Image 1 (tube, rainbow, N blue to C red):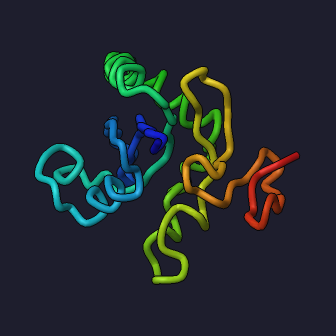
Image 2 (tube, rainbow, N blue to C red):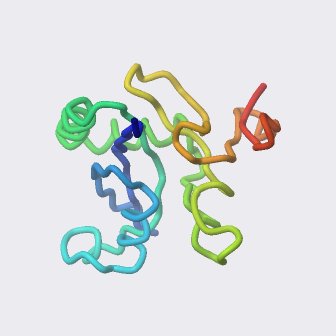
Image 3 (cartoon, rainbow, N blue to C red):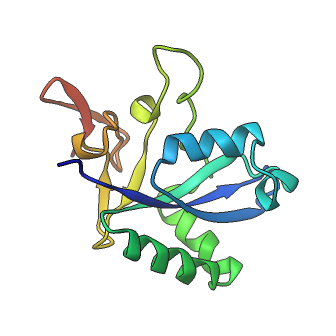
Length: 148
């Protein structure tokens, strides 16, 4: 049986305008934001940088979390981003540059799961590379995965 996963994410513009969304395919959705395929807020304000995300197993939890975040004040969203991404780096950087490095396997940093525990990418998300707080890589079962 296929494991489903859902993501709540924040995209930012260069001037730090924020967009909150939810998807079942983070790679595809970020690519849509970057290319401007979808009309609306994120295209109008050029929100092309993935700056934060959480991973959920259950769609209901993801929908509820998206609603919760959309009701937060801007300051709280910024605080959440800076907890895991203080430089506001594009977490999808390197996903789309070439056939070999396409996808989140080369630059994924952090996400959170349904229990709001900080998790690095693992095989269940099909995202093979991750970084830990020390920005080190650890090889696990033929794949690189964040570790301490």
